[in-house]
Length: 76
Image (cartoon, rainbow, N blue to C red):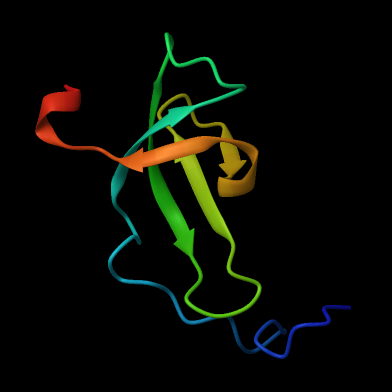
């Protein structure tokens, strides 16, 4: 059972439209020589403030498990 009032069977935290569905560059384990690409599929604007990223290889990671930044055109 969740300790957050925003999580339940019939309600979910508000999402941050500035991040939701944005393309990102992800670095796992401080490996900046091999950045991965992904897309933010969850960006909570209220507790529990989770960010969930689906990477291009279909793996899913939490924002707390990696370093990420919103991709810009220069990132390729």
